[in-house]
Amino acid sequence: MVHDLRRQARVGRSMPFAVTVDDSFVGQLTVSNIVGGSARWAQIGYWVDQAQAGKGVMPTAVALAVDHCLFEVGLHRIEVAIRPENTASLRVVQKLGFVEYGYAERYLHIDGAWRDHRLFAMTAEDCPGGLLRRYKTQGPLEEPGNSDPTRR
Image 1 (cartoon, rainbow, N blue to C red):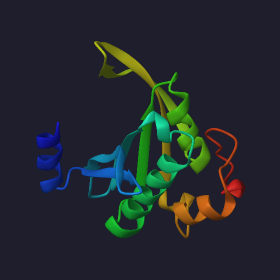
Image 2 (tube, rainbow, N blue to C red):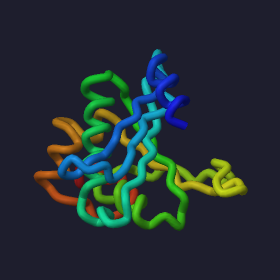
Image 3 (cartoon, one colour):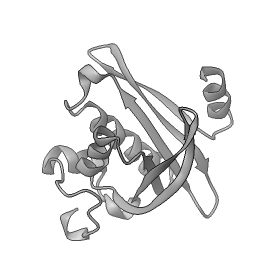
């Protein structure tokens, strides 16, 4: 996996990040499937050690990665696909105000079977001034998949 991540990073198709707290490795976030040209989008996947769950570590890491992708790299859209039963990951996108745009049946092959996923997205227009700044100043949003732009 590490070899493949490094290869994809060298050719600009992914950006793997280690997530640390007090200099200890606690999780991982990968920006993958980076597409340029007129699409300019990517996907984000993440995990965090259970001992760090619920402490704001992953929402902060995702917000940092989104800001980097949208405002430094020049992407326009970031997508996240989450299994419906993964309440912790769903809470991350809920806190950050990602918009739910679909449901993909049998989307990814995980643990020996094709698994359904809920699909979320964020564009540069959804977070003017940066997602991290909004998250840190306004706090977590409460409604999953909120598509009301006045709440952003």
